[in-house]
Image (cartoon, rainbow, N blue to C red; front, side, top):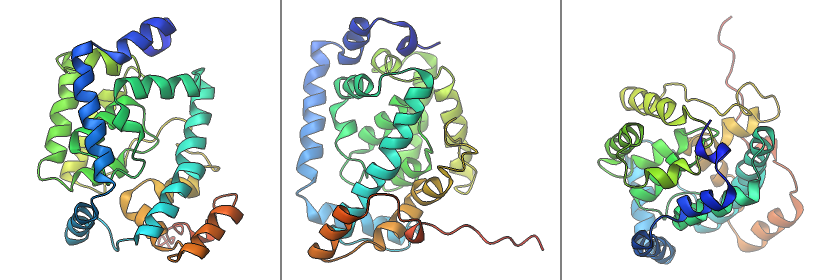
Length: 258
């Protein structure tokens, strides 16, 4: 059992918030992340790096990025997480409060394009991911993003990470960081290596199409690029589409066994 499952709510809040000395760093990181929303040149540069590296096939427009991220949040991230927390007996709303206290920037950028490498890494280490591949692909935007992730997960496992106590108050499964480290090392050798899927997603017929679409950065951006590119059509999509449009998702791979 992790402290997230055993500690009292008051102790969890205190552990997640950390020391007053840590507050300044949290505010600074949150401010930088919010400022990045207005820096269109940096967003274009990040998308260009991902395109040049072959991590994504095409870059969505600004409107497609907004619509796609809302769909990813409302059809995949939130409902899949809510189901998982209900299964393991964790209050979803209280968990988001803990995450915000531990690192406010971790909740403010669902697509990750406006985050710093450390924010992406902190987000990865905070919670058991349905599929961590998206975030690992995202970290390739920075020269040593994956190397830094590996070092930080290693320090979490050895008990030397500076935010270790706060992260331990949030992460839900005791072996998550060990599994994450194994995958990081595999991914650095072979980006096509199969990722560890969260227990409520692995083998689930309900989440299969959504995980195939939003589980990686490449396939997520393909979906985003299928979204409306003009404001009126985008608004219509957000108002009228109430469930995941499977015809716009990532198709099933063809069976080539015969």
